[in-house]
Length: 230
Ligand SMILES: O=C(O)[C@H](CS(=O)(=O)O)OP(=O)(O)O
Image (cartoon, rainbow, N blue to C red):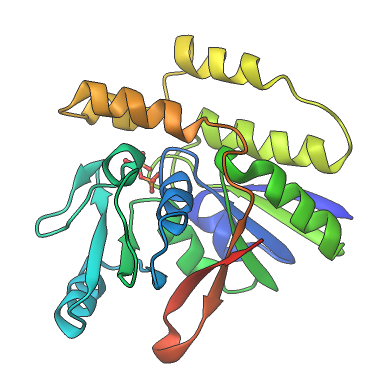
């Protein structure tokens, strides 16, 4: 299996094979927390206008997302796992748009298949790839706004790659580095509620909390749905 690491929006655009779009803080950690709370659908969108359009077209739509780490006007929740941790999404259509992660999903048009990447379901991702045995895998580290590298996404990409190669990575060291040395945890600086942001940090680093993969599937009107694969 050929394993490539790519970065940001361009990396997503050119990614081939089975593509993992990685966004630890916070898009694809959030997506897993959402998926765990039983929504009828999760729709990933790039444009904010599309999110508003979907909200106006379906009564049971909930908007989740941010720009520059701040919740968007009229949205129900920010891009924050702590805000939605205990929310029952039964029968709701979740529409998710973010600065970086969801933009990567939308751009990954050359991929054979796209799944999301985060630490909260890292083992499930590794197991899924090992089971599928694709010829080539691209791990796309989305970074800040899809334009600048971010430590947490690079570390997650490397963690998945090493696991696929049968090598162990010390996860405690990763957490320690992100907590004490990394300067790339943008949303922590921008957050108005510091306690909530710290809780987001912990929830996004809750390794292997979920045992499912989220697969991006293009359907009606070219909309991209995230579907759980256990
Ligand atoms: O969760 C966030 O605030 C980030 C903002 S950015 O990437 O640092 O610009 O969004 P995400 O798309 O989840 O990375």
